[in-house]
Length: 95
Image (cartoon, rainbow, N blue to C red; front, side):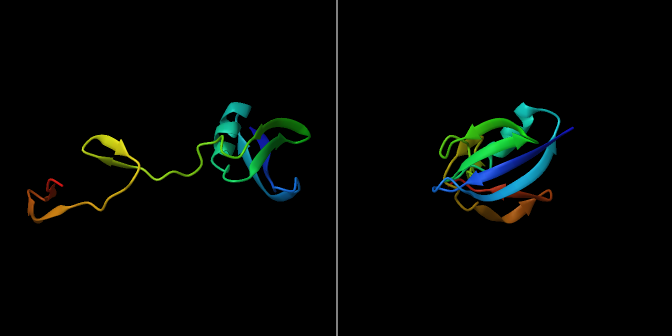
């Protein structure tokens, strides 16, 4: 296991915050750190070794999705349920 630290880089180039974590390898650590990218760059280090800089807008960030009728949609809508239950399950009405 390797120790890593993800540094959030402010728009002025200074470190705003950091998070320490442990992963097996660099690729897993990078995948985890990509979730931290929002409107600030992230620099990933393992001790004194620079691993990667993740630029703002390049990572997946936090995205809200919902699966509706077997398809992934970005805008979530509230589920519509029928007022009855059949065999202990909730029946979904068509929207």
